[in-house]
Length: 297
Image 1 (cartoon, rainbow, N blue to C red):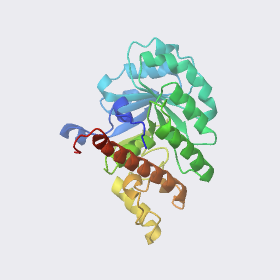
Image 2: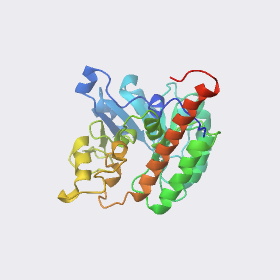
Image 3: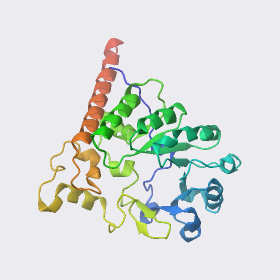
Image 4: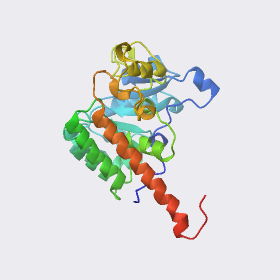
């Protein structure tokens, strides 16, 4: 079986979250900050968010371009003129609060001529329609997945099927895309990193200036990733569902937060589908040299 292969991941569209030099390791944290606090985070690596396009553009313009990973626009029912007229070109993350907002994406389509754009979509009832239109408009997708119930898992399977098999889809859908590639290349991956919630990389700064790991882990002390993985495996001192889970090297206990009693039976089927699809693609590609009469590598 042949699958559509995309040769780049979302972090080639949006600058990598990971440090690349010794100096960066010394101050590798990335701060997701409200636009009004840019003055307090000068010289740090930041993601700047706002509901107002004009405020977003003005705040980012006050920072060194190398310090800004991307801007987040938190409202879609806005006048996009400030982004259209903005002289700078920056990656933008359009954050949907409700999948029903998807018709509003049309007003942003012309911005692709100037800005790299991703759309973050909450995995709530009906989100698949939002994903379909987003991809049709050639925007990459990031799924804000949380802890989906069985109905949402079924909808996630529909989106995964769209990503894997629909030849007209040319943009990545995260977290599916990076996880699929990790299975294809047979290398472990980190869902915490893919979803931009790695506690060793990210800090979410609330509107009143309070720092936490992420909105999902708000109120927790700043753990490291190994602590989160270990606690997911040994919840309450007893063996958990994560213990001996065949998908733990990709998930890392991500789906056990914030509700540690969440059952992963549904999301495991998604990992299984991605693993099988990657294996089938590798097998198909390995047969190509034989079909052409060339030696296999």
